[in-house]
Image (cartoon, rainbow, N blue to C red; front, side, top):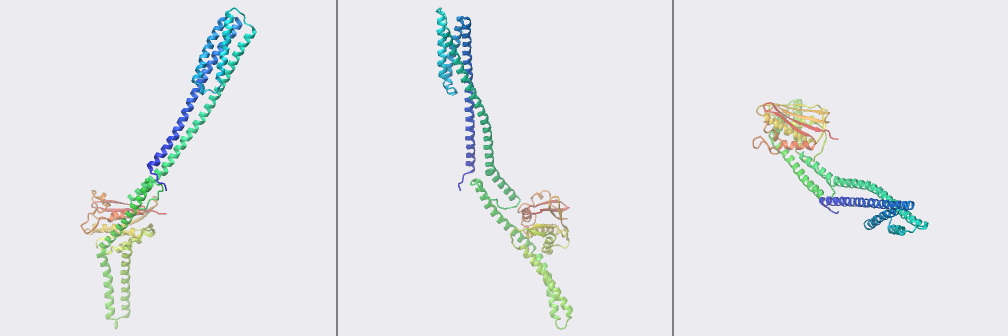
Length: 470
């Protein structure tokens, strides 16, 4: 594929537009200049015709009155005509439609000579016969007719030129509009659309969505930029997955002691029940022994449930959404943190059973885990309540989830930083500062938002909005 840089594409496009505009302007100016000369030729010929008509008028007056003054005046107009016809032939000949204008000049000369001959005869005292008078009239009529013919041709040519100029004006306007539309389409396809795709991709990146940009087959800088952005997005996506998983494992590390305690209780119960059964197997109450074994099986199921929840949570999976019951997800998360829950901290779950959402269950569970652990750690000394609520928002078409605690609250000067990576107010070893940042990224992957409200001495509330996915 021929690769032409965007700069060269724009230069070529505007060069073509310039060439089209230049020829349109040049042809328009040429037509204007030609029309201007045509009008000048018409004016000159009209003036010439007026001179000759004046000469003929005085010629007729002479034949009526026999006053030689009229012949003198007629010759003056003919001399003006002669001078004007020379000017026309010299300056405007190439613009004339009547190309045999030399014939007019020849007839004018013959007409002028006939008048001069007539003047000389009159001044010599000779009388003018009818034949001479007819000859003069004939020459005057011929030149008048030729001039009128030439003028009519010029008028016709001007009329045609005006019509052509009008048609050309429309053609020019439509050509410019067409060229402008072509340039606009070119800019939309080669500049605006690729820029919009890249802009949308950058917006998605800022919200934690690392989907690849659609291929841009433009053969220019945009195609190369899209390829590099996709490489960068792939790298960011991979690192983000690693970050989410590492934060998940860090959370599991925090839960280790609590999980060990949770497993220790059923194991102790199993051990005690089995010891009693072994001691009394030969002489004990059979029904009592069966009850102990049934209790042991329940404790095994409980331990298996805890281990299963841990394994499912820790498993590294691709981002995949499914219709999930939110109450069940919260309850599964509470199982993981049961051992971390102090005796003075109470959790109240107010989520109707029918509320579901299309989510990635492992990632949303990780968000719940981060928020609940933060609330527990904030209240482990003072105690308090944690409220987990969910409701549908029909206006915004989605689900609103709230995790609220009655802890000490977050100071106003740091509340704007809590979603920043690695920002933490916890003691060294108790937090990486990535929990809320990762949670924000997970919610953004779902196309949702997470916000916080807090007041010192009152508590903190995190609000999550998850839009419905079609």
